[in-house]
Image 1 (cartoon, rainbow, N blue to C red):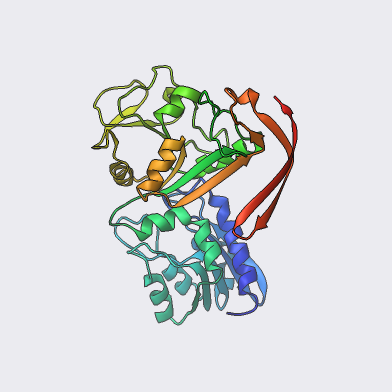
Image 2: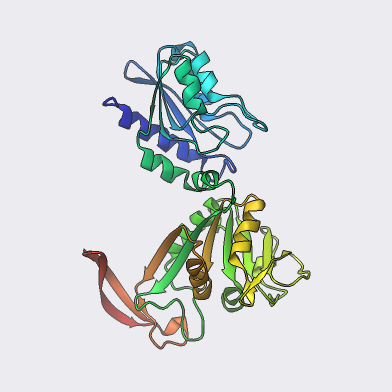
Length: 350
């Protein structure tokens, strides 16, 4: 690895991130072309079916690409059945690029290693794994899906919101709004970055959420676990703002949604059947927002890939409604070995 490899790769990854929420089902990709220590061109993948990052950068660089180095977020692709765009590995070789550096390898079985071998055979110096962790984090959903094509299981992220005393809701079951506006805005971005968002019927009955991206990007497919088809006809998830799929053990019709009948396990929808069906429907990532029974079910089934937890500066205790919570202020967070210590001052009851 050369001294400037990390510098230029960081830029390639930053440019690649411009494709967030735009490129499904493709990964985000960025490319910078450097010659004589100077940036001469850059490009990013703008959408499915459109030119890849390498093609965009090579178009800008033109003849200056000969003898240059290209930094790419993901292993350059090759041609395979059904592919809509030309091979980026071949395009880099044809342009006379002398050196190609990329972060993460592409686990797509049609691509994995083939791009590297093609470029090496054409005399290009190929360096892989520069900022590999950052590259994998950028395209975590794509890489997770491609790394397990046999099961086609989507990546499952559990999003939890708890009070400081560990409660997800008041005694009445109310959980809206336990977190701040800033946290809800962040969740909107997470939804826009996910293919689907999932809740149980209990959350729909108690909070009646829309489950949209809140204007932060495209709306995900909305999934409701509803074994007995109890969803109200006027539920907000049936408003047509995004596709809604109701996952049930029963067959039936619900206006504004598609009912997907699946096998049961213990009287509830079998979650393994759920993730298998979502994979067949090309859902790569699912943000599971709960409630608690749903979180526990995914964890017990071994189907969760990541957990994201908000801790709100409130004490719910025996509060029947969210407005009765004890509000805290200026929380301070520190580590205590593997634990987290939160200290906060009590303000009042709302």
